Length: 198
Ligand code: SIN
View 1 (tube, rainbow, N blue to C red):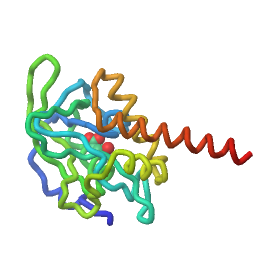
View 2: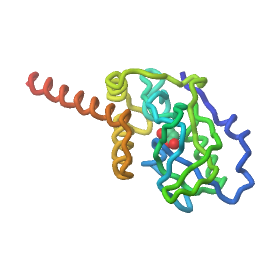
View 3: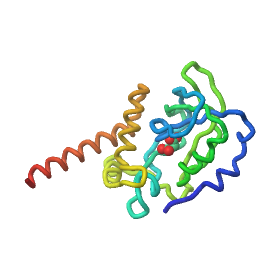
View 4: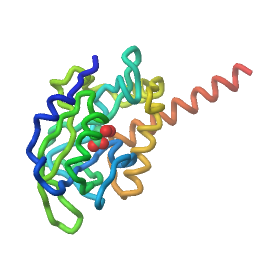
């Protein structure tokens, strides 16, 4: 089920009077920055792990065949690498719309590679939201992703785009790379089947 969070995010006025604020992206916000930003820097957050546990009914899937996109799960001691963007509060409207299926703005500490830290924003889809799908084996997640497509394109391209972006950042994420491996295996199996059928 989809879950429109635009109105709830509008009531999060914490950074509205700031000239600029850091936004930390850990999913498509790493590889698809379709918004104006002043500066961007690789960064990480602590106590969270990235998981393909959020349903996508509006971007990378449909209500009938939802895709899976990433959210953050509390994980003590873990770090999640991504990209931080310095934005102005005018950009919130665009981001709230883009992240409207279950994601809420949350203030959190963002750590930069030079050791400095600032308070900024993340968009997070918690398990309370109606579009949350929760855990599943990585091979099943890959199968679901392989079969999903929505207005923003193939769900597989979201996964592959994220994996490429993490490699470019020099960061490991066993969950993401394991799903990517299963997706590649599925592609190879389908290619074999097509060959046998001809
Ligand atoms: C993010 O990228 O930070 C949020 C999740 C997404 O849009 O993929």
